[in-house]
Length: 346
Image 1 (cartoon, rainbow, N blue to C red):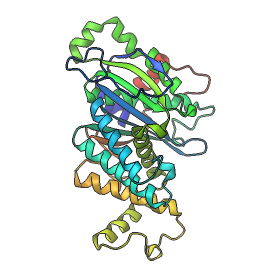
Image 2 (cartoon, helix red, strand yellow):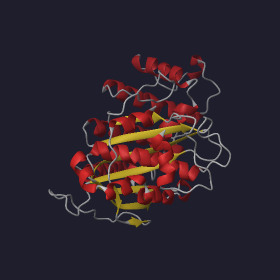
Image 3 (cartoon, rainbow, N blue to C red):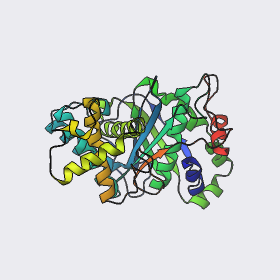
Image 4 (cartoon, helix red, strand yellow):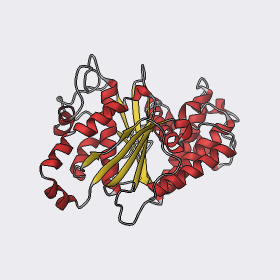
């Protein structure tokens, strides 16, 4: 149960939101100073995948030191320009050659930078049919905010506290305003205000959310990267029954240096869509990258992308209901300390 493991491993950080905006990031981001005073030292970029009738939903956070994130963003932008692709997102992976190459390079760069310690990628997926989410009147907006909150806390602790700038896809349906309420009204803030000095002495660090901005994903490549990883997490759950076998077929073909798409019918996968075949190639690439670097991301254990631990730089976690008391929020519930207490105490 990943949430319990996260809580058992990581003490809660102090979250302080000092600014909230909806416009895009400025062209010139502040430089990171050696003492960190008043400077943004870390950045987090997020997006979600799944809505409406989708059984599985995912949220992803790409985070790291600001300068490393800016450098990676420049490299991703160059990839998109070279392939003449305006936006590299999971929903566009449908077999187009330019989009396919750009997406593969995005994944390759993301994993490579994560292995160097420059960024980390965390993905959390949940099943709307499980005991927590199969409730009448479920508030998907509020539920997403809580899932994102847990990813953010984990990324912040792994990053070492510090000052953070958060950037999320501006899609209003994702409910980032609900997340802001969680950040501003959470029990963690109240606890830290009551005994801040004790908390600082124990943790020796502090997470300050300097700003939270909703950005157009077309103009921010790291949001596109988080979209791809969120899509990978959700889609691998949707296709868990056949995905491991299909990836094994792709691996066998790669080993004998055959074309991946030439004779698909011979492998007994006729009927799958062109987009499914293109997306299988992305999963295959990610599977090989993670295995070659021993990142602990497994595809065959559960049939979907899954990470059993919490310490790696690339993680795909599945939310498991914690107890019979762990129930998704309903539309009339409020966000904030009472909302978070339910999942924190189970």
